[in-house]
Amino acid sequence: MDANVRINDPREHVNEEPRNDLFDLIAGVAGMGGLMTVIFFGMVIFKFLTE
Image (tube, rainbow, N blue to C red; front, side):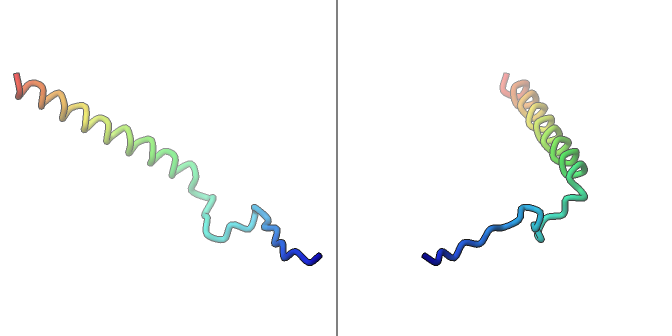
């Protein structure tokens, strides 16, 4: 029984750069916070304009 099984070592991720994980996390949190802040103030302005 010849099964062509290829076991990949998880340490062989050639397409990932693990060096910038903390920067990516900080940029993602800051970007989402900035987007939510813009949406919040946009909705506040919209509320005052429609009253």
